[in-house]
Length: 456
Image 1 (cartoon, one colour):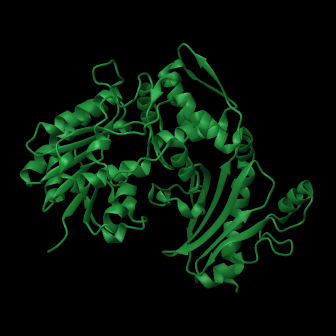
Image 2: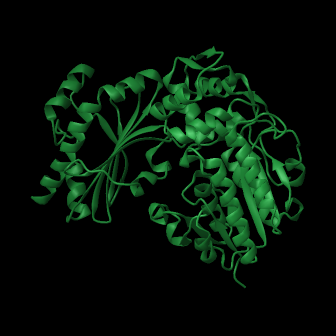
Image 3: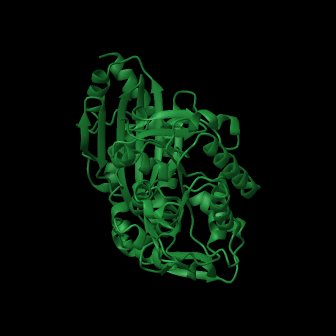
């Protein structure tokens, strides 16, 4: 008898990216739903799931997505749409619930937001709660989990904390940062979502989930700062316009403006558990404390431990190669790719000569200048990982942060990616001050590798 078919919506999102591989490990058949499934082709689990293109705002596309599904995870939000997203979320939930009923889906599991609906709360949080109410208006049992700050590398809320705390010695913000929060480890969110599949006691219930500890938002930032060895203080003002804070977050962190605007407005109220029934109903979930969750997130600060989601994002070219500059999971990233008709062996042989005997393949004069400043002549990098089609070098350069250079040959592309994890304000200033030199060196280095490989 085949295993149950599980539909995971919002497959390009953070929680889905953690949930899908764990569903596969447990032997479930998984159908992943996304508006742009091509964005998922680089995920390690892509070939092991059934992909379906569908949009909850287009009900006709949901028919195929729902066929044969036993349980559907609703992991969708519409904050990135900007103005009017609350109305869109209600309509989306109505469309989804109706399609699920028509397809005889047995169970819907929904992840919403943690807030007190009896209090004045931000539109984003109100919309999350109303989405759950809309899903429950149908005849299908809905298990709803309400979570606040999710502590995990790649979580929007955690990345806001990470980048803002790294950047500012004195962290500015509104008095809202003194509001209370009950965060939850990313893995514990997944634990609850998985437990709801097999634990009948939770079917149809609403559960507020979080750690036993209650913090102020400033506490979460201070704990991150302590773990990174930073001294941080806060400058809290009676009022800071939400649009202004969202603009700053968009500029300085990986979180785009529409989502930052919604999330910042959500800080205006407490996000704590009022009804602690989740632990009793799902005793199989063992909760992490915040320190443990934070340490686990920091362990992922390595190029091979993050998903290369940017590779499937829209492309931009500089006249020679595809270029993407971004902030992601604690890194500044400079990603470049160019089509090649060369073997991985030829290209890797050239790259193996990088930083050997005073040869950096391109702009040697700049590297010698850097060496003179640091008091060394070469050996700026050490091999971190070397495979048939991959070389990853770890930087030994003196810098306020950690750096890596990576080259891959795959799918007819030579891919060159520089990673820099800034440490404190100095790391941000360092990366941006050297940006013009990076653009020159990284572009030239990619060209030189190809030229030298062609004549081998």
